[in-house]
Image (tube, rainbow, N blue to C red; front, side, top):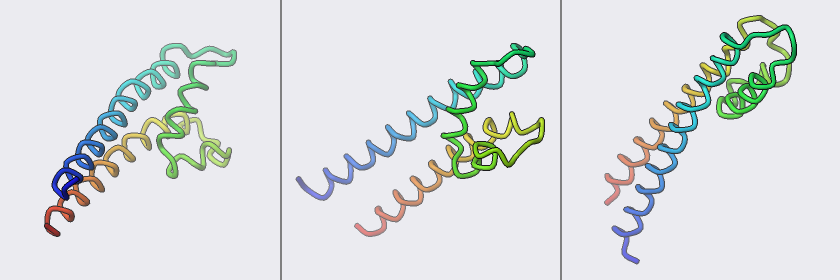
Length: 106
């Protein structure tokens, strides 16, 4: 395999991973926010629990205070919905930086 072919494969994988990350965020964050705001009940909200697990994991390390229980505020439920897109932007920025860096080396 030539260096150019390997570089193309790496670029495709970066685009695929970024696309999967973006799809996950676009699907899960609105579900989580809707389950908190629209379907708020005094009982256990299982949908919100699933959403907080998914968006919390996608927002690590920024969402760690919420996941380990040190963020007791009522606004903390919207914290994972904000941290997951932050990681998506960081994912895109690091990918763009690596792509630019690898194109300069050629």
